[in-house]
Image 1 (cartoon, rainbow, N blue to C red):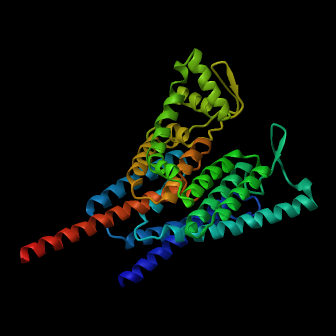
Image 2: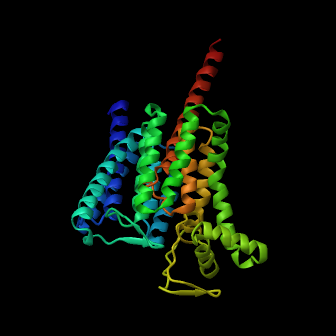
Image 3: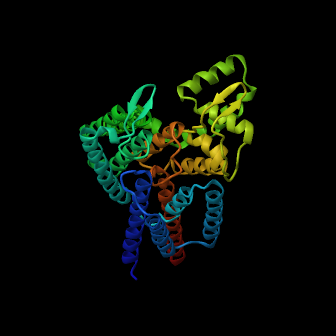
Length: 396
């Protein structure tokens, strides 16, 4: 097989894999499409099949092959212990990125997601108008929240947000400021129905920074590299350290903790409880919580951990905080401005939600794979250039 044909095959396989994963992820959340268990199994096996085929087409050094093998075992262990297989899916997505056009991948997945989301929205509004009693509403502080048959209002908001970001990334060069404003308005409308503020906050950050990039606002553009380089690591250190120190706080520090905890609607306190009772984990584990919990003079009706840094620290594995922090640090120099903006948005999103380890929902994690291989190619090109230069010198 020629090199160009192999590259095209690899691109197609990767695109098929992530379209399959996107469909599985949306069907997992959907209460509109009831599917038998065998379809879910078929989707998973299909994803694994095309991704393993793609990985088999790639070239490796022995060292890199051993490192990938070790990381694959670690991710598989975490999936089994934590019962969260999207970590392994994301790992496969990262290491299978050799010679892949990520913009083309997310363009395809965003098209599929937009179609599925529109079907859910249309059916939801038809039922809402015709037989509203058939819809089970979600309420918060007396406010009715709409979920559009996608599990929960927060889930629908997340899907709208990251589908918007996929659209933004894959078409960024062609988008005008007015297009960016439309993306923001769509997420603002989503907030009006879901009362989920994370989506509109993250969209506001991404759109505002993108407009500054389009308008060449140097002061803001100069901030993108350090923010994308250090912000994930800063959150990975500060947030776990903050919740782990809760039992040591008193007086003013306890007041600061409570104020920040209120801002994040109780997320930090739940993390402090889990750490105090169970400690942290390096590679992942499963914890079952009682329906009602009494801890340090407080009652919890349920444990809700909508914070990725806490989830990784106490549930999925602190090792992944370290790996992702190092990875985003290493690729910061190579990423484009829009990619830096997406990494910043991804980092902020992780403070408010727990999806960031899942490449099917939050695609910026795949940028690690993109620049992992670009750096390898650059090193190879430099070696070839130096070899040619040496041979030329010897000829003279």
